[in-house]
Image (cartoon, rainbow, N blue to C red; front, side, top):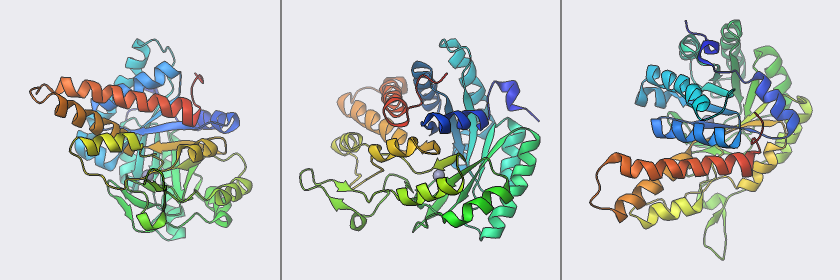
Length: 332
Ligand SMILES: [Zn+2]
């Protein structure tokens, strides 16, 4: 058993309380590689932002759970080395799908876990979440639960359609499960293809797809039921069109990839939404930079040559999100 406290990590409790009160949201960036981790830490340190580094089941499979755990510990030390004496870094399990997986992460030094019982019947979701909460709280680890179903594909999580969270269920769910934060479904979606073209309108000037707006009425109804309770948005990448264009220009093929407009995320950040998950945008930033570099430098083969601009491009994106979308800068 390793306590996250010994690794210099923090849980989400105080971080979320401050974010809800301050009208901003904490970035939750997924990471799988050293370059992503470095870019996340550099961005958080330079902007003086708290940050949630999250690991999915797929990341554990790709990079090895033990390595990721030591990387998170390394992230804390790296932040200090970069001149941040008290970094606020959470190591979070994204989409835990069983009690055993959550327990394994808690025992390994994670400071926060998500148990995603959203595909289960309501009562089973409560029971599973409560089981994880009871274990996690013994070690002061915070727990995110999910109510409502997001559309889209993310690693092993996939759904054809979305079901908005029912505001009339949230009080009962939060009370009986004991969760510390709640991921809700208000129209965000996993992946780089968040909406089908038929769900969107097309901008006549650019020819780009314009996605349907988020259900702010559902968000506000939930906020009214649970005043100040930390709310989480998954699937909140914006799928920047300049990155998609770069990928397509240099041999990629991502037609009609579309995300959540940043103005809507900015508006959500001012509400009780205090954690916003961004994964696809990092993948796009990395891939765009690598494709461009390799196309322009066909004779280069040292991975450090093309991973350097990839890391820079991800860092630029992370800083942009922190400062211009979530507003979590200058909070340390
Ligand atoms: Zn998610």
